[in-house]
Figure 1 (cartoon, rainbow, N blue to C red):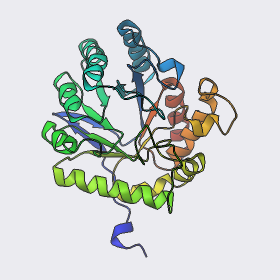
Figure 2: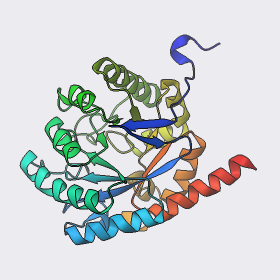
Figure 3: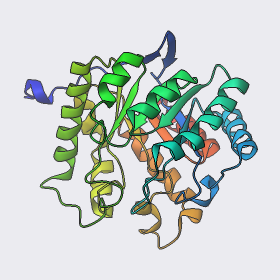
Figure 4: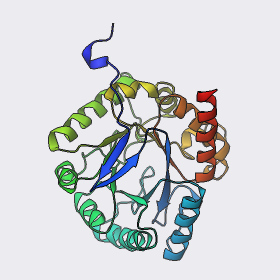
Length: 287
């Protein structure tokens, strides 16, 4: 028999942001828009505003529900970016997309509370934080005050150190327990809508990543929607002896597994293919 700590909780089917409602009872796709010059995947290396607008339009036409805009590369050993530079990268993109597509749900990928506040003021509806509030101790209170959903990711270390021999007693239970702590802290701070992300590739070996994916459904014990960020990650192309540029097929395969394990959101570079995976998963589920 499961104890109270290990009882499956009902997962919410709606996210609410400043009066807007987003249905997530069925899996949805979050498209990645990197406003950075040094993303690990070439398709994301777009710094010109018109190119990013074209990419945003393409993603929306292909079925993305959320667009996630980031101004800091979080690849292993990425250089530090100042707040001013992050602001200069993100805000023009956010403003332009919000102006052209005012009804679209926009997320901003940041671990700085000041960036979160500036982004929401310009139309962002979700804050996506790789640190789960651990890089800025004012983040959780800020998000609670802003009344927007919060994506809390697990990371061991920092982007500069996370791949320096990551260690766990049991990666599945360790990540779940740390996300439980973060989720509880969010609730205490007053954040209503929290999405949990196990952080594939963030302080994990390839083996750790596959163990997490194989047991992703265990995060359902937290009663929070689950985001899977697998797109073109090194766990795919290192296993296949390929490159990020040729990792789409592997990404698609792992997306199906993530859906079968209970993922609610897929964060992706390739929207069309992710939407197709969801359609095939739905056909399988209803057969």
